[in-house]
Amino acid sequence: MDIPRTDWIWHNGHLVKWDEATVHVSAHALHYGSSVFEGLRLYDTPAGPAVFQLNAHVRRLLDSCRILRMQLSYSADEIASAIIETVRRNRLKSGYIRPLAYRGAGPIALDARSAPTELAIFAFEFGPYLGRAGLEQGVDVMVSSWRRMAPDTLASMSKAGGNYLNSQFIAMEAADLGFREGIALDVNGLVSEGSGENIFVVYRGAIYTPPVGASILMGITRDCVLRLAQELGHEVRQEAFPREMLYVADEIFFTGTAVEISPVRSVDKIPVGDGRRGPITASIQDAFFGILNGKLPDRHGWLTLVES
Ligand code: PMP
Image 1 (cartoon, rainbow, N blue to C red):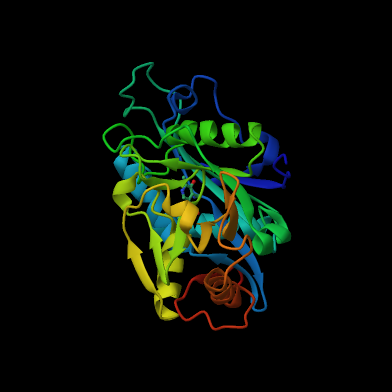
Image 2 (cartoon, rainbow, N blue to C red):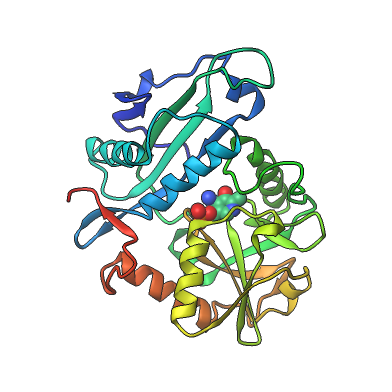
């Protein structure tokens, strides 16, 4: 799916027309991957359109900049306001929001800290990434032959453009072999994450997810799910586990802004559990989507109304 056009894009402090939000070919980020970005969801809640986990995403964008030594000339509050303004001006009710900070035109050097850091924000309509059926029936995935980058090579805690070359290899391999997604192992051969989502496994009543040291992105949906699972009384462990855990798991699900909470139906053609969404996955989905559709109170303050 190509990105649906909207009227306005926020670019370096101003809303400009879609066609005017351009970058020069000499921009450092285009050559060397020196960009950082976020993906947020806008939900059409009963109280009106609301951005999910706005502050957490802005904080992670600033953390990503800090890791890459990128100086943004906007505060967290200014970025949050710019996100809201972009949604409002485009009159979106639900969708996906993409803030992107990047090193612009500057020296041809690798250390380009003297280049300006630019910021763009666009937003567009976007439904369930894997479709409604994906949320219920789950997806078929494979363990990738590509590993996540070792912790002393790239910085997986930063959502940096350059990191996503690794994700592209994982996603292309999975697509070529007829799978919906690939799961990467880390440098130690233990489970890390999908190309664009975190992974959770239910095994003998406990819920496992790889720790930050397993070259994962610290997902914001992962954080929400850890919280919801604990509230539902589940035992939750952030700990490293091997590939074969995926073959004996009772349930597996992905978490991410795009995929939300999506069950995994099979791994390497081996059905997960009985090949259908399991009860723990369903209960966490209910707790999550209940907050978004207003059936449950937003008790953690995860939603920011666009018109407040
Ligand atoms: N891992 C990777 C590599 C991702 O790209 C994403 C999507 N941002 C995630 C995990 C999930 O993170 P979040 O829940 O914050 O979207």
